[in-house]
Image (cartoon, rainbow, N blue to C red; front, side, top):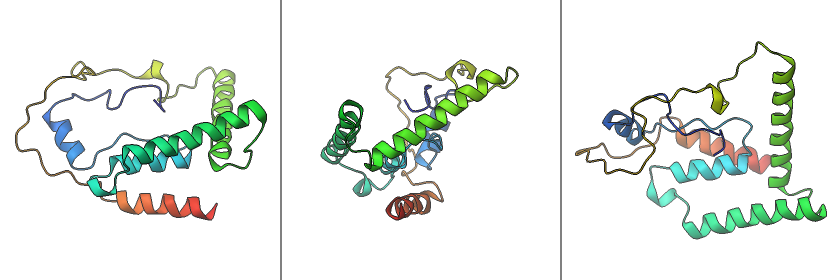
Length: 157
């Protein structure tokens, strides 16, 4: 939803992809995504089940972000809310990208839905995957470090 196109569009959705995901492969998160949202996504992806947020935690966190941002839009409140600040920065970045793309006719980006090719074996409908003996899920090599650095950078802001 952040990028505007589905994950792993250019590779087959088969046992090899399932193994790569078990071994820590995750979709790329655009760098302009608000850090609060990036952190939430990364926590959901954590291979360590006990480190993932619960539904209740996600619900309350998203509800708080939504409430802060809607209050900002409706009444100009919460201008100093971290999510409001981060969303405004992301919107500014997107607006700058759009204006840069409008002035440069030869530029193509790989982040727009119009520019990606879906692999014929990339299937986005629900189906039973009967892959016996998948490896135990683990995080990508630098996952914990990246999540820790992201969390620390947010506490410094």
